[in-house]
Picture 1 (cartoon, rainbow, N blue to C red):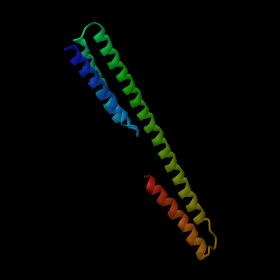
Picture 2 (picture 1 turned 90 degrees about the vertical axis):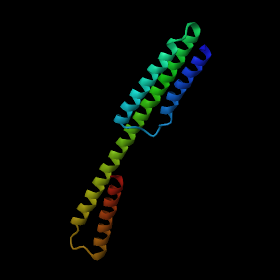
Picture 3 (picture 1 turned 90 degrees about the horizontal axis):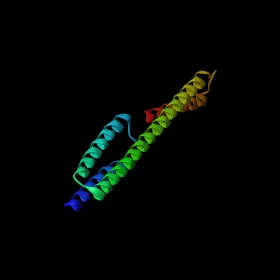
Picture 4 (picture 1 turned 30 degrees about the vertical axis):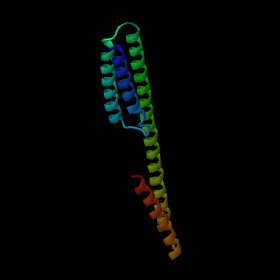
Length: 137
């Protein structure tokens, strides 16, 4: 009976530990909070399974559940940090594209007595900056 409980506790600890390990692309704050709540709920239920045990088996079960929970928490936090960095990079790219578009438009407007070639080149620069901005948004 004790062996079955230990196996069940280990299986659930492994399940919720690996569920969050798979998500390494980054998560938003809303997703983080939802996954953190699910992680804590799973941790509590896994701890409950250890309560029926006694002695060394109980200590082992609690240690393994706690270890898996801590690993899953660290992976979840790393996923959130990854998302924050990716989002900041995206914001920076958008700001650079906006600045590039504004610069291209200024250069286009600053042309005095432009030739047809100058107009075409300036318009191409504006269009290219606008397209890269649209891609980022």
